[in-house]
Image (cartoon, rainbow, N blue to C red; front, side):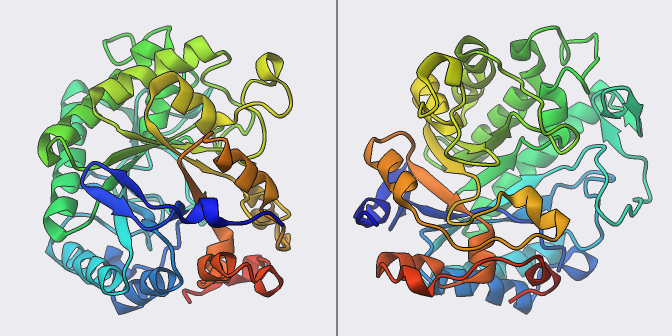
Length: 370
């Protein structure tokens, strides 16, 4: 195993300095009764901070819009009770020496695993769950304006509560991503269009509103993905030129971190251009936009995360390929998901190179918050 020193360099992004390059990936846990995070949630994040995570991204937490969540246990990021709960979370993380940002979210027309139905009709760009699959209603321009304002309000609250940065969830087939994807955005107004650049207008307006709310130095991340939960094979950008058309305007609007979600971080984004060992999604995003990038996808585990939903166990694996890519400055930070659910001390064990102590992942761990 190569030295892990490269993973433990500090990094400064605007007003944020992190002690290492390891990020806790946002992972939906649905353990917020009535949408309010409590002491158990604070303790869950605190344990990962104590274990050495440099930057923690919260599970998705939703904005103040009707039907903005698709499961009852998803936390709100609005209202006095929920915000007081999040204040307890960030204070606990800071006391343990880490940095944290909430992932601000709207689930759009997606369904949660329990198939729970919200009281209000769900909203999306064109009233579609997936291509050719109607669900809910198409958003009016007034709905869009109110949603943009709700994202900005949530980000301002995050800054006020003491969070170190904020991330917008623009991936995996949720609301922002449904605007990106031609399969779910059939609008004929200024929020639609034949090109990915045209369909990025909604996201750009959200980003610009958030940037205006938090100021120029506060780190603002956007999570993006090619794949969707509705279609694992979906691709928004088949070429680097299209990727630049998609991501460039979003960085120009004010996103200075791109969190590039892949199912397997080691897979090349455009193998036909630079081969089977070519740049991954985060590598290409950094090359094309100059933004700070976070890579993610099955780090330290034998099976990619979709296998967890099939009940498959993943064993711990080596980090040589990750270390090699980071030594080549392909991307700036690496997000770790399931390995940190199974092992809150994963980062500290990696720092000590105690690889024989790393734990695998079993889906049963998702049933409790530890």
